[in-house]
Image (cartoon, rainbow, N blue to C red; front, side, top):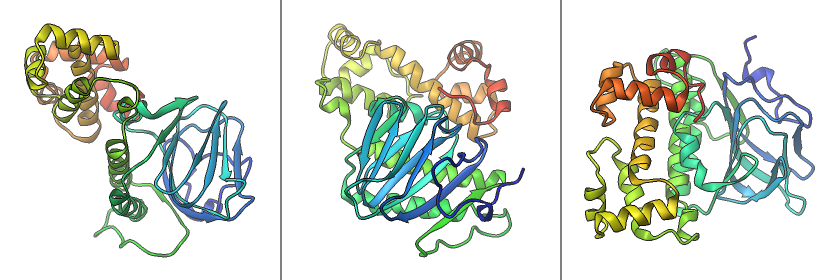
Length: 306
C-alpha cells in the first residue's frame, strides 16, 4: 500500500504503528506537554531524533534517556519504546526520521550505545548545529523529489512530514541523514575519551576509519603513533579487545558494504577500492561478515544489518 505524508497523522500518537520498514519518512515537530508515543512492539525501522528546543524523554526496553537541544538519540528496531515531551518541559521541538540504517551507520553509532538499542550522541559542538539543521531540512525537501527537475526548495514552515517514494528521492534523503550521523557521531566527544582508551590507540582508529583502503600495517600504524610495532599491537588489542588488523578488516568491510549499496561498481572494483588484494578473499570475508556474498548483498538492497 502506498503511504503518503497526507495519510500520516500530524503527530504520532500512543499506539500508532511505525512507518513500514522500507520507507524513508522524515518530519519536524514542536509538541506541547502531554505529547507521547508508545509502541509496545517497537518499530521495524530505525528512529532518529534530533532535538532543537525544549526537552524530550525516550525509553526503549529498560533504558531511559532525556534529549535536549543538540542531542541525537537513535532507537534501533525491534524493542518496545515510548517517547514524548519530558515531564517538566514546556515543549519538545525535534526532527525525526524513520528508515533502515545504512550498513555503516550502526558501527558509527556503536560507541554511543547505552543499552537496549538506544544510542545517545551528545554533546555535539554548537558550531555544528546549523549544518545538522540544514541537513535535516534538505532531507525533508529531497524526500519530496519526484525525479523530475530539481528537488523542491527547503521551506521554513514549522511542522512538516515527507515520505520518500522514488529510489532517487530515498537515496538523496538517506545521504542527508548520513551527513547528520557523521556530523554528530564525528563531532561529539567520543565516549572512549572518557573511558581510559589511550590517545595513541584512538589516533590509530581514526587513521583506519579515515582511509580504510590505505595499505595500513601494524608497523605503519605504530610509526604514526610513535610506538614500536610490538608495543602498539599489545596496547591496541589490550584496550579494544581486537587486533589492529581486525579493526582494519572491519573498516574495509563496512566501506565495501557502503559502495555495494550506493554505487554500480563491479565486485572486483569494490574489492580493490577497499584495499582487498584478492577478490576471492574479499568474497569469503564479506560473506562471513554479512551472511551474503557481495553480489547477493547488493541485490538485497540496503536491508542487511551489521
